[in-house]
Image (cartoon, rainbow, N blue to C red; front, side, top):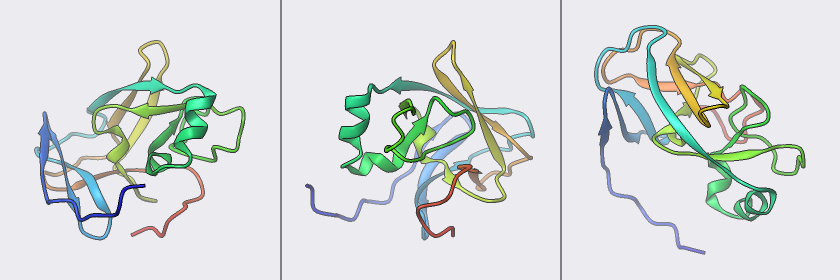
Length: 142
């Protein structure tokens, strides 16, 4: 297992969003320009994992970044559930932080094998974009 190390501060920009270090949360996604309510923020392709891949990920840091493909509206849940189908999100999809008062939402696009993130409210430049994970949290909300 790799030793924990401090990651350098960085910014990665794409269209109207960027990934930055969010104090107390780690990485997160912010708006770099005004995003209007109901505007598509990002479309993230998914990599669908088979059962064996899903359970091998459980023993790694990637466990916190899985996305349920079999239960719409859930970000991550228990790998112990044999009925779940898990995916890894491409793009910035795995870096949207949770909020119980989100300003964005997500929907699964099964035919396109992607997740569509949409503004739930107007989002100002510099504002963090958060979604609701829709499940009991495994961390303390900040």
